[in-house]
Image (cartoon, one colour):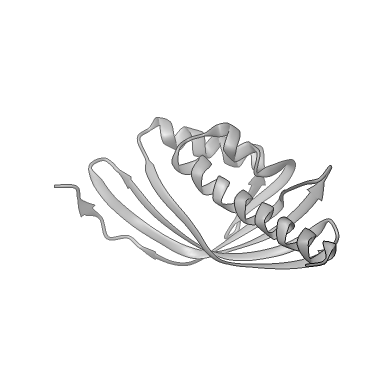
Length: 142
């Protein structure tokens, strides 16, 4: 394998690890893991709502204090390099939430991320989450 192919594989791996680190950071309320996935100047958009990544992280941490639990899964990761230090990454997202003795809602959609490589490290510079569906049914935790 030539050096270029090897570098592309390592870059793809670093990008996928970053995506999985976000899931881990949110689900385990690990602030350091979550912060290490985004550039400090990143933007986070969910539907029509857009905010700084700092505000988004504060929302995640607030939800953990009021008892919300989540399971995030990222799958079907497609990486398109647009330059040596930039990539557009699309992936599927599914989230199961629980709280107050109930499981639900279930959310699924897609993530479109602009990844940037700065000082040899890949992180998200801009994230757009598109909700494709949501199941509002709540199941008791008996």
